[in-house]
Image (cartoon, rainbow, N blue to C red):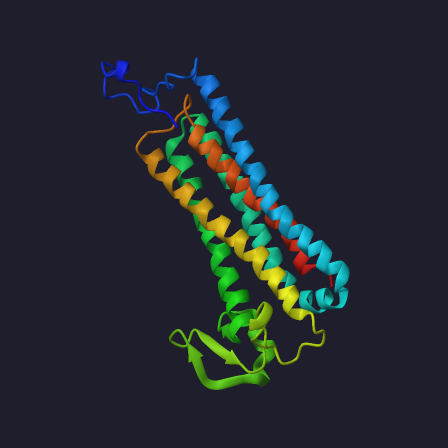
Length: 262
C-alpha cells in the first residue's frame, strides 16, 4: 500500500521497518493514508456482503418454496459440529483482535503468537468441515475419530476403508450431493438436491474465504517477524483483522440457517 520513503535512507538501519515507514507521496499524512486504506477495504467488504446476500436470498426463496426439503436436509446436519466450529471461529476472532492490540502496543512476540493461534483455529475449522461433514455426506466415508460413527455401526462395511484406514465406509449414508450429482437412497422429499446445492454453495464459498483469510494472516505473521508492523504502522494487520471478522460474521448467520431450522 505504501513504501519506505527514499528520503529517509539516512535513518539508521538499527530502527525497525515500522519506525522508518513513511506514507506515500499522494497522501498528506500517515493518518490520512491509514483512513483511506480502511475506507477502501470497507468498500471491498461491502461487495462481500453482496456476494453472500445473494446466497441468503436464494436460501430464503427456496426455503419458502420447499420447507419439507429444508427440514429434512437440516436434520442431516449435526448441530454439535456446527456449534463447535462456531466456537472455533469466535475464539479466532478474539485472538485476531488481541494480535492487533499487541502490534499497536509494541508487543511483537505476543502478536505473532496470537496470529499463529488464529491461523491454526482457521485450519481446524476447514479440516473439521471436510473430515466430519463434506467427506461423509459426499462419499459415505466416516473418519474413525468422528463421534457420530458409532451411530452407524450396523451399516459399516468391514474392510472398506480409505486414507490408510482413517476413513470407514457406511453403507447408504453418502450421496448427499447437489443437483444432478445427488443419489442419496433414503431421501423423502424430491427437492433435496436443491437443499444440498444451497448448503454446499454457502459453506464452500465461506470455507474458501477462511482459506484466503488464513493466507492473509500468514503474510501478516511473516511481515511482523521482519518488524514491518508496530505502534505507528499497522494498517495491514488491522485490514486482515477486518476480513477475518467478516468471515466469522458470515458463519454466525450460516450456522443457525443451516443447522438449527429443524
